[in-house]
Structures are given as C-alpha cells and as structure tokens.
Image 1 (cartoon, rainbow, N blue to C red):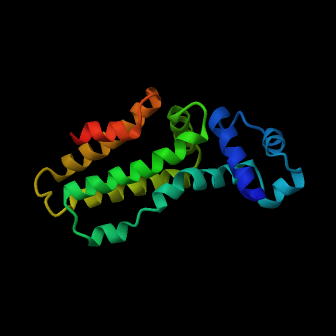
Image 2 (image 1 turned 180 degrees about the horizontal axis):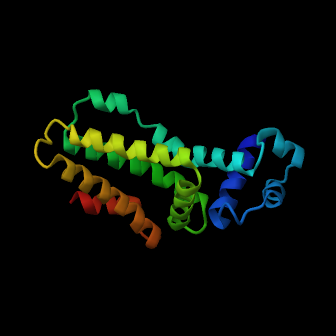
Length: 180
C-alpha cells in the first residue's frame, strides 16, 4: 500500500467512526503515521481528502456500472434483478471489513456525504435514475413499470438497511431469502 492509499484508508476509518466534523486534520495526520508534508503532498485539505475518500469508498462502486451496456442488452426484469444481486454481493463484502461497527456506520457516512457534497448527491441520484430507467425499459416490463422499478430498488436498499440494524445477518443469506 503506497502513502496515498494508506492515507485514504486511515481517513476512511476515522471519518466512518467519527464523522467529518468530528475528525481533525491533526487526527488524520497522526493516524496515518506520515509527516504533515507527506499528507499535504497528496491532499490540499481535509475537504479534498474527504472528497477522495467518498470517491474511493462510495462512488467507485456506482461508477463500475456500465449503464450504456445494460441499456443495449434488452434484459428482462428477472435478469436485471440478477445483475442487482451481483452488484450487492460484490459491494457489501468489500465494505463490511472496513469498519468495526458494521454497515450502520457506512450508512451514516453515506448520508453525511449526501448532505455535505453536492457532487456525491448528484451521482447517487444519477445512479438510481439510471437503475430505474433500466428496470422500466426491461423487455418484459409492460405494465406497472414504475411500480416494479420502485419495488425492486426498495427491496435491495431494504437489505442494506437490514444489514445496518442487524449486523449479525449475512448478505448471502438475505439474498437467498428474497429469491425463494
């Protein structure tokens, strides 16, 4: 892990456990065990670091989705749901080990970033608009298309919420339960 990655990882852990406003630059520098000069070599400010942490630990997952390809594939509702499940089965196991407090802290940081960073808010809204559009335009989604899209998105976001409030649950088990 290079110095920049170490700072990002350290900052993520501090931000997720303390929040943006309760994390000082001094804490970030000390926890990274790097000099202040090395720290500022990579990041102009705490805000710059926070933006890059959000990019790396949140937005990167959204940006992995190739909406153009999905739009051209003419998938059925069932196929789209399988793709959503793959997304969550990839995403959740990468996030859970990053905080000792479970998914609830990730949720808190997610909404903190949503309120603090207009760019993050725009990307999140764009992600869900694209997902909704893909579901609405599914080849076998001819009636109640918006209802089906809303229900499907709610179902998978509900799983994330369950993981936050019941950290003993496993994502794979929940996926099996909703697939039965």
